[in-house]
Image (tube, rainbow, N blue to C red):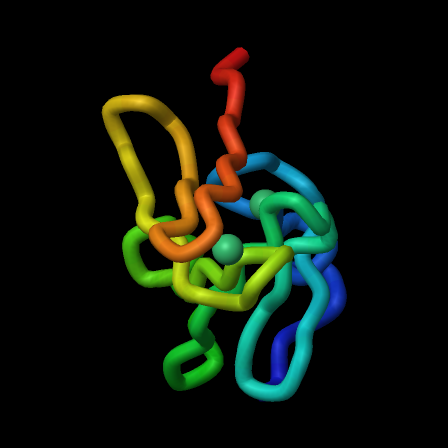
Length: 86
Ligand SMILES: [Zn+2]
Ligand SMILES: [Zn+2]
């Protein structure tokens, strides 16, 4: 992955607006309770919640994205992260 620093400085998580950091071929949200992992395809970051990996911070299962509720919910342990739209 080869993203210019000024682009990285502009990118934020689509859900919680926290900073993202590169990790391998992905960008990881730095808000631990959110923690979405965005793919980078051919050096183009895909900052879409639907395209992101959404590991649960407690059990690492993949959380479901409930768009109507602005929430991530873990089907295994029930961990829920709700984003409040501003
Ligand atoms: Zn986030
Ligand atoms: Zn869980």
